[in-house]
Length: 369
Image (cartoon, rainbow, N blue to C red; front, side):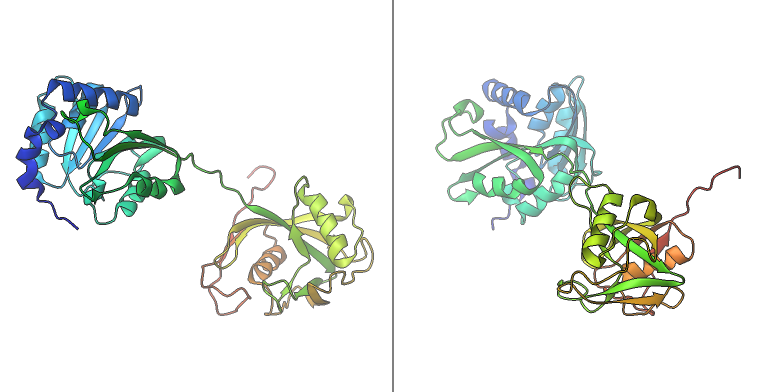
């Protein structure tokens, strides 16, 4: 990869019309392009690899609040002097690496970079980091190209932007000689990439039955499911589309252990947010029902369960799914809200000497304090 001495190149870049923008026609052409790429209202613009500050100056003159960054102290000094001389410009210039600029995350409406990515050792990593510097709804404005086989094709950057942007607009710049002060026949382009809106957090909701027979609770031994097979777990399942949690619990109890429960048979025992090792978070609703409600429990799913058994709530076995054990322990202690968050390398099974991942959340109490 080519290594560029930006200090040595500073004067050259400032004098050439396609870098210094001293030619009035070139300057006007870039100002016109930036007007279409930057927000219509004044925003915070981060110009990375700013060089002598030509684009930063145009953005500042358009009313934007500009932060310009260059790793060369000499370049930064030239940019600082240029911006300071502009009447009404709101700008600051920092010395730093364009790939990891010394600025706060989520602080900018636009990240602007012109002929910078091609010179970085890992353009894709730089783009991912730059996206974190944007506010919701922000955009990346990237001017790049391929010159004599050197540079970055637009297709490569478009693919790199896809995972975290909502859309990418491509503008071909080679055909506009006004931007360069002369005709060019290589590939020059701009990509304007709008950051994808943050996705709302979603979790699977599941339901769990604590069927009580005095001090005992009913557990089922998992088999053939592909997850936690051989371990004990309470009768449980997922809430399906269109169901509320109580309806889902009644359905699951009928499907798994043949009970015909009614809404009046159920009491909310606790609510647990849980995450299995290397898994996604879920919300679990634990319901209590008394033995005899809905009939005698039987194993209705032998392809998923090798058998049902009763166990003292005060002496639960160890060969039980860890979050189920945590839920039952919290229920026995009178707790009502629990977080149980596995680390990725935690065992699925309850392990007495493993770290206790249960976090008990205090509930409000009725009446005066």
